[in-house]
Image (cartoon, rainbow, N blue to C red; front, side, top):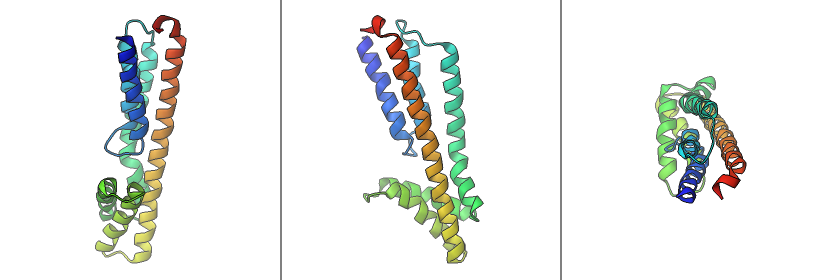
Length: 165
């Protein structure tokens, strides 16, 4: 049973790392569930403080994930139409069978959103670049947090290896 639960927890850790790049899966929260599974195992000692701190960080990153791309678009002169275009482009880029669609989609979406909103092409391109920069920044932050959570996960298991195996 321990190996099964550890495998489930490890799966959540991997899904969390993947989710740091896919907008449909909240990466840090998914990775945190992996730590939670370890916490719920009576054989493994995970401190409540560790669990709470990682939860607070995961929730903060999850909230920021909604603001960072929009802040990037707005900082570079984008409007609400550009932000909506970013979101639509992100969804289309995610399901489109093209390489790099998840990166190209938000860029093209923000550009088209601004052009439809009657912005000149220079302003639209600048807003699209801001959208791309915001998306990449958000993904990078989520990736770093999920890798740190993986380190916490491995550390917990390493310290408990005599109990588990």
